[in-house]
Length: 220
Image (cartoon, rainbow, N blue to C red; front, side):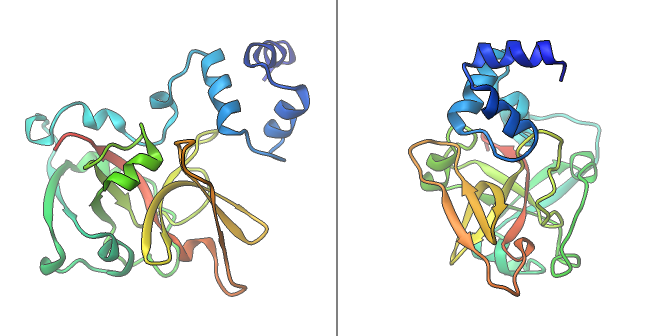
């Protein structure tokens, strides 16, 4: 970014020069408050930044008309999404039809464990999941997971990647960082705390990243 543009952004967002410098040099991340200031200064909305196709929620899938071939994605429980390499018919709660092109366009970075797992599954968010990620997720939203993306490498440059993360017996949808042997699980809502998930010496982040959130359908 040119220095004059950086100076204007820093002033518009009311951020200290050291704060911006540390962020651009990847020494520290922006706080949610700082991110909100930057977005407001640039007249950018969260919908334009999120690596999730929230536009899919504009209409129920049954009403969407497309010439693309459709592919059935199973909606399963959180435990099945975390633990079942291949989804059995008995584990399917319902199925949704998604344009095959939307699925095929997703890049994969699977961990060794997940490379041969059934790739796309979906879960339906409950009230607590939605509250932590409001307004990114709404209660009852269908979240499609790409279980062949278990890497912390950003899916898109300068954009946070949204993951489904194994946290004990729970499946959380969060933005994720990694620092000093711990996964940092960040909600979008400021009313929910950041959670730290320590990794054992033999564990890697891919052991906990169930998959990347690649699509969200809010009206089904």
